Length: 53
Image (cartoon, rainbow, N blue to C red; front, side, top):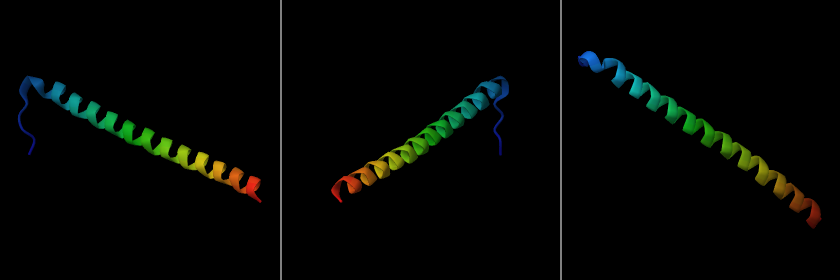
């Protein structure tokens, strides 16, 4: 099912590879920041509960 890309095969496939790598990196950074934010929020809420009681 691969179309014949001729002399442009490397450029096209490299572009696809770079795109998928950048998308994977973006998803990874987003998940990492989300986990970091959740931890920071939990710590902040724990501090607030200690000061209330």
